[in-house]
Image (cartoon, rainbow, N blue to C red; front, side, top):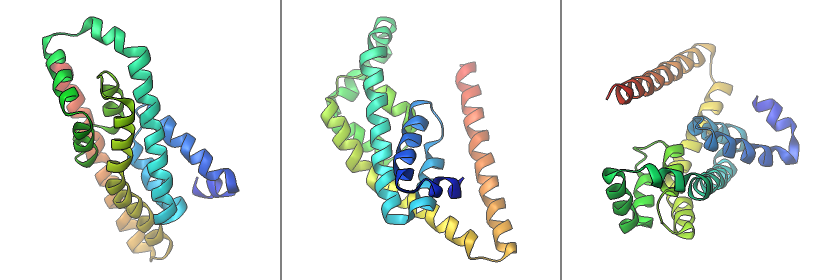
Length: 186
């Protein structure tokens, strides 16, 4: 896939930004896209494209939630949701900053969830952009270092590295699956 995207030439970054937005909107794992950004474009341009792509996807998801989903959710909400939304609105950009710096809630869910609040769009976008930068730098570098390691290491190290990645990926998906099962049973 990396070679295919590189073959796109000058439109590769545009395709990548589209891919990032698509992943954000459809709840696909954006960390995979971020790592790919580092592998494709290197640590500097990869970080730039990752931050732009993540911010664009976040903005679109926020707008969809605010203008198409919000009325329906507010008509169904209960006391607990109302209290949560009010608490988020009181902190505004600070809450956005916290969720971006400490990603305890999935990125995609945060984008749609914050669209249900009355946080100003400009505060949301600026906070998202600024506070995504640290995690994007780190994640992009991991993508870059991973592809560099695979390209310049012996076969044994490549197999060990891939095994570690597979184990972490399986652990992550198992965790998500169990979390989903737990939330459905409660």
